[in-house]
Image (cartoon, rainbow, N blue to C red; front, side, top):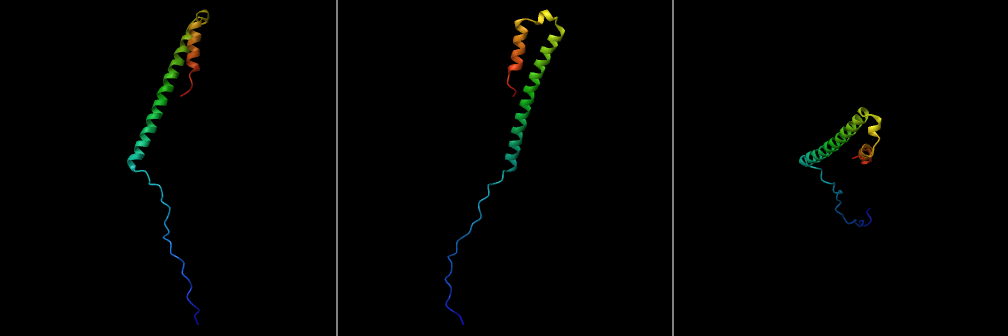
Length: 86
C-alpha cells in the first residue's frame, strides 16, 4: 500500500567552485625570468659594495696611521657602511 507521493525537492543546479586558472607556461617563464633578473641585480649591487669596502680596507691597511686619521677617510668609511643593505 502506498500512501501519497512525497513532495519533491526542487532540483538545484549544483556547481563546483570555479578554480583559479592555472598559469600558462609562458607566464611562469616570465615570472622566473623576472625573479632571476632581480636576484642578479641584487647580487651585482652586493658585489659593488663589497668591492668598495675592500678598496677602503686596502687603503687603510696600506696607509700610515697618521694619514688615515683625517676627515676624508672617515667620511668615506661612513658612506660605505651607512648605506642600507639592498
